[in-house]
Image 1: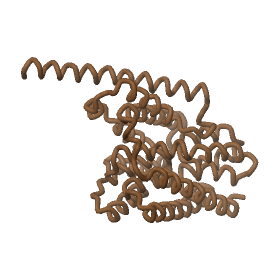
Image 2: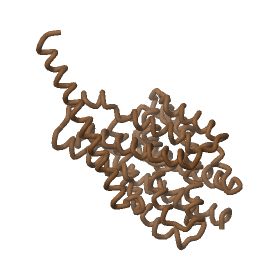
Image 3: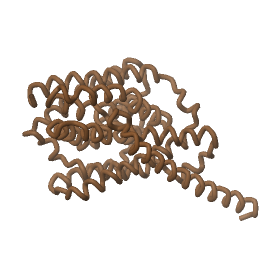
Length: 331
C-alpha cells in the first residue's frame, strides 16, 4: 500500500472514531432530554430527538458516507428488534381473556388493507408504502424500518417513514394521553392500539390509573408480537406490486423465534426492565446514526404529502376500530 493510501486509511479510521464518539455523546444527550423533559408522556417519540441531533451534525459537518458503511445504524435496530421479541411472546394475544388478540388482529387487518390500498391508488412507491403503513399500523419506528429493509426500500424512504411516525403521529398520541383517563378502559385500549411507539406508550401508561395502564401495555405488546408476521406480509405484498425482490432481515427471523420462546418463559421483572432500557438506548443510538447519515436533500422525495394523508387515515382507522371493539369487549 502506498503512503497516500495509508494516509487515506488512517484519516478514515480517525474520522470513524471521531463520529462514533459524537454519536455516543448525542445518544447520552438524547437520554438526558428524554429523562428531564418526559417528552414520551406527551406523545413525542424520543428517537426523533436523537435523529434531529444527528441531522444537525450531518448539516454542519457533512460527514462522508463511508463512515456510515462502518457505523451501520441498522445493527442497533436489529438488536432492538430481537430484544422486543423476547419481551413480547405470542401469549400476549391472550391478554384479557383473548380480547387483546381480537382487538389487535382486527385493527391490524383493517389498517394494513386500507393503508396499502390508499397508497397504491395514490401511486406511492410500494416499498415506501409498506414501510410507513407498517409503522402506522403496528409499532412505530422498529416495525417501519424492519419492513422497509425487507422490502428493499430506499434509505431516504426509511428516514421519511420514521419522521411521519414521529411527527404526524404525535398529535394523536398527545390527544390520547390527555383523553384516556376520562374514557375508562377504552382509553387504555386506545393508547395501546393507536400510539405507535412502545416507549411512548410506556411513558403515557406511567401516568394513567393502574387498570388503564395495564390495558394500554397489554394491547401494545399484543401488537408487538405480530411485528415479524406483518413485516413478512408487507414485504411480500410490496415485492409483488412493484416487482422488487423481498429479503427478510435475519433480525426479523430472530425476533420471531424470540417471541415464540418467550411465549413459554416469563422473564423476571428486573430482567424485563433491563431489556426495555437496553432497547431504548439502542433505538436512540441508531436514530442518531441515521440522522448523521442523512443529507438534508434526501428528505425531498416525491409522494410525501400523499403519504401524510394516508398515514392520517391509518391513525383514524386505528381509533375507530379500537374504540368500537374495546367498547364492546373491555367496557
